[in-house]
Image 1 (cartoon, rainbow, N blue to C red):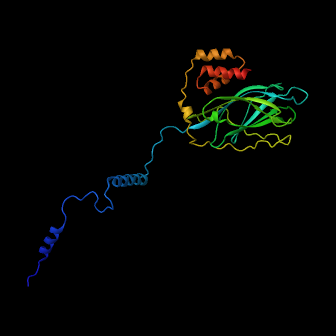
Image 2: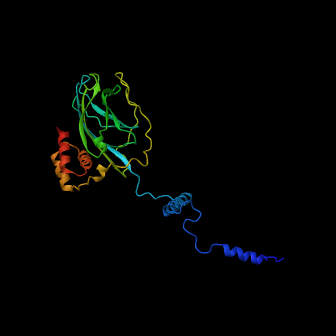
Image 3: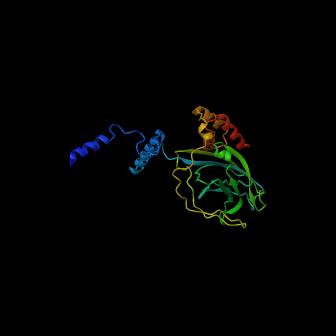
Length: 279
């Protein structure tokens, strides 16, 4: 009887082994190239995630800024024995701002105050109150209103309008206030006029606006709408700016500059807005 040596058995097994390169679909349910590429991309993404790879930011954080020009008001009644000294208190989100007092402004006060404030995500309205500044008693609440920011403003347009005021005379019967609203999104993150914390007077049965500590602004607000990104900024020379200021000597230079910025350097649109404010 002939016995087979171990070396002979090994040679027989080697002859049965498939030699050469393996096919692309070896040990796969289907050997399509699409699945191979998809698996490669998934493996690469997993490797980057495990290694902590992150995409570097493309630029500085953006902030949403609302510019409010409190121009003037026409009130229905002068309360008190002398002409009132009105001022405006405004709340945007958790922050409260005030204008200067118009001494003896009476029923037709003028402020022309520009307020630049951060617009927190989800905030789409502002609360406004008009007070009569008193020397020996608490300031008296004259009128108030709640204004929803128009969608046109959030789309990058400058919006000027008269808003009705509520008060003792009834809802919408206490007069009107003239505001100019504009909205921008950019790297600027500092409000020109910092908010103040106040304790409003609670007269006339009206629930005064609540006061909260001002929170930190959100680091990454919503991106600017396409309409605003597409509007080019027109450059205005110092001579043109001086011409506009000479046309409106009764309006402060800061107000003119703010309206010009809100109109993105458009001289004609700025003049139209200033004409409406000066009427």
